[in-house]
Image (cartoon, rainbow over all chains, first blue to last red; front, side):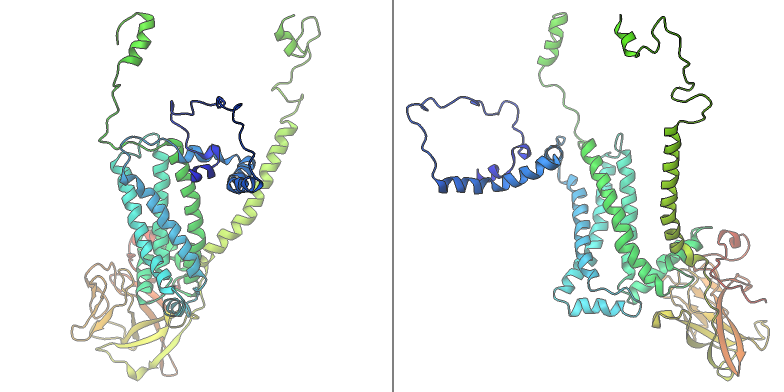
Length: 292
Length: 226
């Protein structure tokens, strides 16, 4: 009850039709016979304290008019049959947020230099408080994110959720998939141990096998004909500045379209047939009196 | 008086001389564009210029390494007497400077062999970088072959592919002799007939039409004239 009073009125879930406050505006019958007690100062102060969060939110809302947008987004209608498969997109986003947060803290200790990168990683793993945990979250989380992206893609594909009018969101999603793979690829080099070094050599050379432009692409990735001093910092910049910015922007566009267009019902659910003939007969009754 | 006439501000009211209407509307006579259009164009042009002033250097900065060829470097790997005709000697030298051990690479060096029809008195330096995807190959003395641990590429004694996924023979390094020392220079690739071409990345075919599908990069050195 108290919790509900903390949510400003515009943000509260709207009442369903017919469930509203029916006795609005009617005064209690015994108002004249038993006038209400005047509240004490302490009671007033306590009431104000309870109202404080609401006041703060209302202050912000008056200046941003965000509540309308938020109500529309948070209380939007979802189709019947919405199930756990529909959480894969949010799960992917949570995985990305987790990568972003752990990545920021790893960046505080990491040195993108060919001679120091390996030592800075072993410093994180062996000496920094909880360093191994944060590094592990980032490392395993990257695999989790790639897996979730593909599950989300599969859900969208098999539920036919890419069809009109959601094709553009599918295209944005495919770009996000490519960017996620770019993140996984550029991040792999950063520990600069034997495995990451040779995996990156192989990965760059696979890029080079594209005809005509391939050789230039691999030179671009390496910043030269061989894996050199600037390759690592180049990968680091792509990994933590270029691609995350693009991912954040595209997730914004992706979410906007999800909210704007709504989600689809699962394919095994057919559209409801009207249960009663009442609306139809009412429409027809006025014109020709036919019954449904 | 109808409402319609009022709304025209009297411009087309009946009984008054017709004022000349600009054609197209909004333009004065003889003008090719309005003042507003001119300013619009100027602002868009200046905005584009400002964006280009930032974007072009940034893009140039990122792609410049493609067009940069480093300094040619030669490194002595041992006296000429160390190398024989019938087997390889493994040497490690620096291919890229300034990045410590990561810039080093391995080559297998021997004297040129008359039996294999090579020009006598030369030294052959075969790169250990697999021509499939760049893993390090190893010369296996007993088999007389180079074998790659990653995907099973196999090369014969001269570095020609005899098995597995590689698309061309192993790369070579230029060699020369200075002060009795064998020196290794820039990398070059070879065709299936061991003709030298400019260095290609692993995974890229050489020779014939492939020379155009995988064009030589400005960052590589010209091959030695054979």
